[in-house]
Image 1 (cartoon, helix red, strand yellow):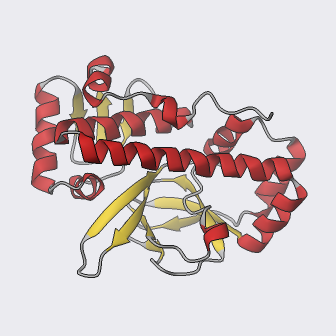
Image 2: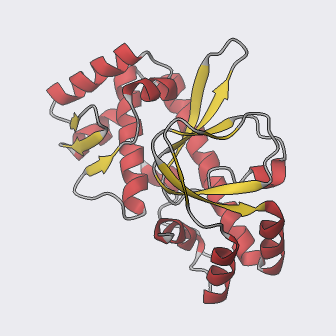
Length: 241
Protein backbone atom coordinates (compact mmCIF):
# COMPACT_ATOMS: atom_id res chain seq x y z
CA UNK A 1 0.00 0.00 0.00
CA UNK A 2 2.94 2.34 0.71
CA UNK A 3 4.84 1.21 -2.37
CA UNK A 4 4.27 4.46 -4.35
CA UNK A 5 5.76 6.50 -1.50
CA UNK A 6 8.70 4.14 -1.00
CA UNK A 7 9.44 4.25 -4.73
CA UNK A 8 9.61 8.05 -4.53
CA UNK A 9 11.78 7.91 -1.42
CA UNK A 10 14.22 5.66 -3.27
CA UNK A 11 15.02 8.54 -5.62
CA UNK A 12 17.46 9.90 -3.05
CA UNK A 13 18.98 6.48 -2.54
CA UNK A 14 17.08 3.53 -1.04
CA UNK A 15 16.56 3.92 2.72
CA UNK A 16 17.92 1.17 4.93
CA UNK A 17 15.58 -1.48 6.28
CA UNK A 18 15.82 0.19 9.69
CA UNK A 19 14.90 3.61 8.27
CA UNK A 20 11.96 2.19 6.33
CA UNK A 21 10.65 0.33 9.36
CA UNK A 22 10.97 3.41 11.59
CA UNK A 23 9.09 5.59 9.10
CA UNK A 24 6.32 3.08 8.53
CA UNK A 25 5.89 2.66 12.28
CA UNK A 26 4.98 6.31 12.88
CA UNK A 27 2.34 6.45 10.12
CA UNK A 28 -1.28 6.14 11.18
CA UNK A 29 -3.48 3.40 9.67
CA UNK A 30 -4.92 4.44 6.27
CA UNK A 31 -8.14 6.45 6.36
CA UNK A 32 -10.66 6.96 3.54
CA UNK A 33 -11.45 10.57 2.61
CA UNK A 34 -14.44 11.48 0.39
CA UNK A 35 -14.07 13.72 -2.66
CA UNK A 36 -14.46 17.39 -1.76
CA UNK A 37 -13.35 16.98 1.85
CA UNK A 38 -11.03 19.66 3.21
CA UNK A 39 -8.20 17.71 4.80
CA UNK A 40 -6.47 20.83 6.14
CA UNK A 41 -7.95 24.32 6.31
CA UNK A 42 -6.16 27.38 4.96
CA UNK A 43 -4.27 29.36 7.66
CA UNK A 44 -4.53 26.50 10.15
CA UNK A 45 -1.58 25.15 12.14
CA UNK A 46 -1.49 21.41 11.41
CA UNK A 47 0.36 19.15 13.81
CA UNK A 48 0.49 16.27 11.34
CA UNK A 49 1.66 15.79 7.77
CA UNK A 50 -0.37 13.79 5.29
CA UNK A 51 0.80 11.00 2.99
CA UNK A 52 -1.43 10.36 -0.02
CA UNK A 53 -1.84 6.64 -0.66
CA UNK A 54 -4.48 6.77 -3.41
CA UNK A 55 -6.55 9.42 -5.17
CA UNK A 56 -5.82 13.03 -6.10
CA UNK A 57 -5.33 15.94 -3.72
CA UNK A 58 -5.02 19.65 -4.48
CA UNK A 59 -3.45 22.57 -2.68
CA UNK A 60 -6.09 25.27 -2.82
CA UNK A 61 -5.76 29.01 -2.24
CA UNK A 62 -9.04 30.82 -1.55
CA UNK A 63 -9.17 34.61 -1.94
CA UNK A 64 -11.30 36.90 0.24
CA UNK A 65 -14.11 37.13 -2.30
CA UNK A 66 -14.26 33.37 -2.74
CA UNK A 67 -12.25 32.91 -5.95
CA UNK A 68 -10.08 29.80 -5.80
CA UNK A 69 -6.93 28.55 -7.45
CA UNK A 70 -5.54 25.02 -7.26
CA UNK A 71 -1.81 25.67 -6.97
CA UNK A 72 -0.59 22.07 -6.94
CA UNK A 73 -1.78 18.54 -7.63
CA UNK A 74 -0.60 15.65 -5.50
CA UNK A 75 -0.60 12.05 -6.64
CA UNK A 76 -0.20 8.78 -4.71
CA UNK A 77 3.16 8.59 -2.98
CA UNK A 78 3.27 12.34 -2.24
CA UNK A 79 3.57 13.86 1.22
CA UNK A 80 1.05 16.58 0.43
CA UNK A 81 1.97 18.99 3.23
CA UNK A 82 5.41 17.99 4.45
CA UNK A 83 6.46 21.65 4.37
CA UNK A 84 3.96 22.35 7.18
CA UNK A 85 6.34 20.44 9.47
CA UNK A 86 8.61 23.51 9.48
CA UNK A 87 6.34 26.36 8.39
CA UNK A 88 3.71 26.10 11.11
CA UNK A 89 0.93 28.15 9.48
CA UNK A 90 -0.31 26.71 6.19
CA UNK A 91 -1.15 29.44 3.66
CA UNK A 92 -3.43 27.17 1.63
CA UNK A 93 -5.90 24.37 2.20
CA UNK A 94 -5.49 20.71 1.29
CA UNK A 95 -8.56 19.28 -0.44
CA UNK A 96 -9.40 15.79 -1.68
CA UNK A 97 -10.28 16.20 -5.36
CA UNK A 98 -11.34 12.56 -5.63
CA UNK A 99 -11.92 9.76 -3.16
CA UNK A 100 -8.63 9.34 -1.35
CA UNK A 101 -6.81 7.09 1.05
CA UNK A 102 -4.37 8.87 3.38
CA UNK A 103 -2.08 8.22 6.32
CA UNK A 104 -0.69 10.87 8.63
CA UNK A 105 2.38 11.31 10.79
CA UNK A 106 2.60 13.56 13.84
CA UNK A 107 5.18 16.34 13.56
CA UNK A 108 6.62 15.36 16.94
CA UNK A 109 7.26 11.84 15.61
CA UNK A 110 8.65 13.24 12.37
CA UNK A 111 11.04 15.47 14.32
CA UNK A 112 12.30 12.53 16.36
CA UNK A 113 12.81 10.24 13.39
CA UNK A 114 14.64 12.84 11.28
CA UNK A 115 16.91 13.63 14.22
CA UNK A 116 17.63 9.95 14.65
CA UNK A 117 18.09 9.28 10.93
CA UNK A 118 19.56 12.41 9.28
CA UNK A 119 19.78 10.76 5.85
CA UNK A 120 16.06 10.01 5.99
CA UNK A 121 15.49 13.67 6.79
CA UNK A 122 17.47 14.67 3.71
CA UNK A 123 15.40 12.24 1.62
CA UNK A 124 12.19 13.93 2.76
CA UNK A 125 13.77 17.31 2.08
CA UNK A 126 14.56 16.11 -1.44
CA UNK A 127 10.86 15.40 -2.00
CA UNK A 128 9.91 18.94 -0.93
CA UNK A 129 12.52 20.37 -3.32
CA UNK A 130 10.98 18.43 -6.21
CA UNK A 131 7.60 19.90 -5.21
CA UNK A 132 9.18 23.38 -5.45
CA UNK A 133 10.54 22.56 -8.92
CA UNK A 134 7.04 21.57 -10.03
CA UNK A 135 5.70 24.90 -8.73
CA UNK A 136 8.30 26.82 -10.77
CA UNK A 137 7.40 24.88 -13.89
CA UNK A 138 3.71 25.58 -13.38
CA UNK A 139 4.42 29.32 -13.07
CA UNK A 140 6.10 29.26 -16.47
CA UNK A 141 3.34 27.15 -18.05
CA UNK A 142 0.49 29.30 -16.70
CA UNK A 143 2.21 32.56 -17.50
CA UNK A 144 3.62 31.83 -20.96
CA UNK A 145 1.61 29.05 -22.62
CA UNK A 146 -1.66 29.07 -24.52
CA UNK A 147 -4.59 27.10 -23.12
CA UNK A 148 -4.10 23.98 -25.25
CA UNK A 149 -0.41 23.79 -24.30
CA UNK A 150 -1.27 24.26 -20.61
CA UNK A 151 -3.66 21.33 -20.67
CA UNK A 152 -1.21 19.20 -22.65
CA UNK A 153 1.54 19.96 -20.13
CA UNK A 154 -0.58 18.95 -17.13
CA UNK A 155 -1.60 15.70 -18.84
CA UNK A 156 2.03 14.88 -19.66
CA UNK A 157 3.23 15.70 -16.16
CA UNK A 158 0.54 13.75 -14.34
CA UNK A 159 1.00 10.71 -16.56
CA UNK A 160 4.75 10.67 -15.90
CA UNK A 161 4.34 11.21 -12.14
CA UNK A 162 1.68 8.52 -11.81
CA UNK A 163 3.61 6.08 -14.00
CA UNK A 164 6.74 6.71 -11.92
CA UNK A 165 5.05 5.22 -8.86
CA UNK A 166 3.73 2.23 -10.78
CA UNK A 167 0.09 3.29 -11.18
CA UNK A 168 -0.08 3.97 -14.93
CA UNK A 169 1.10 2.24 -18.06
CA UNK A 170 0.44 1.92 -21.80
CA UNK A 171 -0.18 5.70 -21.98
CA UNK A 172 -3.35 5.27 -19.91
CA UNK A 173 -4.08 6.76 -16.48
CA UNK A 174 -6.77 8.05 -14.12
CA UNK A 175 -6.71 11.85 -14.16
CA UNK A 176 -8.72 12.15 -10.95
CA UNK A 177 -10.00 15.62 -11.92
CA UNK A 178 -13.23 17.01 -13.27
CA UNK A 179 -13.06 19.63 -16.00
CA UNK A 180 -14.15 22.23 -13.44
CA UNK A 181 -11.21 21.27 -11.23
CA UNK A 182 -8.86 21.36 -14.21
CA UNK A 183 -10.13 24.88 -14.87
CA UNK A 184 -9.18 25.87 -11.31
CA UNK A 185 -5.72 24.42 -11.89
CA UNK A 186 -5.05 26.29 -15.12
CA UNK A 187 -6.88 29.56 -14.52
CA UNK A 188 -9.39 28.89 -17.31
CA UNK A 189 -13.15 28.43 -17.45
CA UNK A 190 -14.70 24.97 -17.50
CA UNK A 191 -16.13 25.79 -20.94
CA UNK A 192 -12.62 26.59 -22.20
CA UNK A 193 -11.26 23.32 -20.77
CA UNK A 194 -14.03 21.42 -22.57
CA UNK A 195 -13.11 23.07 -25.86
CA UNK A 196 -9.44 22.23 -25.38
CA UNK A 197 -10.29 18.61 -24.55
CA UNK A 198 -12.32 18.37 -27.76
CA UNK A 199 -9.47 19.92 -29.75
CA UNK A 200 -7.00 17.37 -28.35
CA UNK A 201 -9.38 14.56 -29.30
CA UNK A 202 -9.83 15.89 -32.85
CA UNK A 203 -6.06 16.03 -33.29
CA UNK A 204 -5.81 12.40 -32.20
CA UNK A 205 -3.65 13.19 -29.19
CA UNK A 206 -5.80 11.96 -26.29
CA UNK A 207 -9.05 10.27 -25.37
CA UNK A 208 -10.45 11.86 -22.22
CA UNK A 209 -13.88 10.90 -20.91
CA UNK A 210 -16.05 12.62 -18.31
CA UNK A 211 -15.01 10.09 -15.65
CA UNK A 212 -11.39 11.21 -15.86
CA UNK A 213 -9.99 8.24 -17.78
CA UNK A 214 -7.21 9.47 -20.09
CA UNK A 215 -5.63 7.54 -22.95
CA UNK A 216 -2.71 9.30 -24.61
CA UNK A 217 -2.91 8.37 -28.29
CA UNK A 218 0.20 10.16 -29.54
CA UNK A 219 2.73 10.77 -26.80
CA UNK A 220 5.37 12.36 -29.02
CA UNK A 221 2.92 14.90 -30.46
CA UNK A 222 1.42 15.72 -27.03
CA UNK A 223 4.90 16.15 -25.54
CA UNK A 224 5.89 18.46 -28.40
CA UNK A 225 2.71 20.52 -28.06
CA UNK A 226 3.30 20.90 -24.31
CA UNK A 227 7.05 21.52 -24.70
CA UNK A 228 7.29 18.98 -21.90
CA UNK A 229 10.69 18.04 -20.49
CA UNK A 230 10.47 15.86 -17.36
CA UNK A 231 13.92 16.87 -16.09
CA UNK A 232 12.38 19.07 -13.37
CA UNK A 233 10.70 15.98 -11.86
CA UNK A 234 14.15 14.57 -10.98
CA UNK A 235 13.22 11.06 -12.12
CA UNK A 236 16.87 10.08 -12.22
CA UNK A 237 16.98 10.74 -8.49
CA UNK A 238 19.69 12.21 -6.34
CA UNK A 239 22.20 9.88 -4.75
CA UNK A 240 23.62 10.58 -1.33
CA UNK A 241 26.94 12.52 -1.71
